[in-house]
Length: 92
Image (cartoon, rainbow, N blue to C red; front, side, top):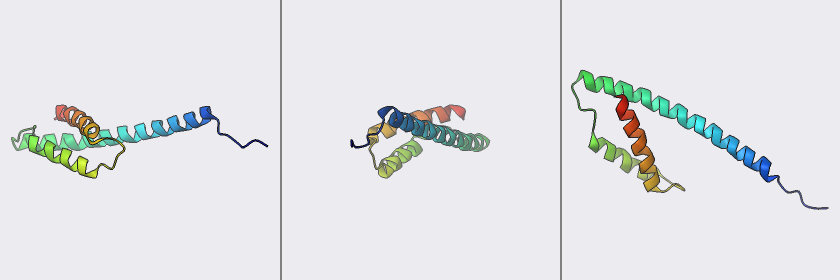
C-alpha cells in the first residue's frame, strides 16, 4: 500500500480559512482599540491636552519590541503599529 498523503488543495484551503479567522480577530481588536482611542481623544479634548504624544508612541514601540517573540521582525511590527497609531490618531 502507498502511504497516505495530504491533498495540498485541502491543506491550503484550511490554512486560508485559519488566516480568515485571524483577520476577523485582528479587525475586531483594531475596532476595539479605536473605541478606546476615541475615549482618550474625548478626555484629551476636555482637558485641552495635545493629541500627539511622541513619548507615548516611543514607549509603545519599545514595549512591542520587548514582547515580540517572532517570527515577525521587530522592524515590521513597528511599521504595522505606526500605521495603526496613525489611523487611530486621526480619529481623535
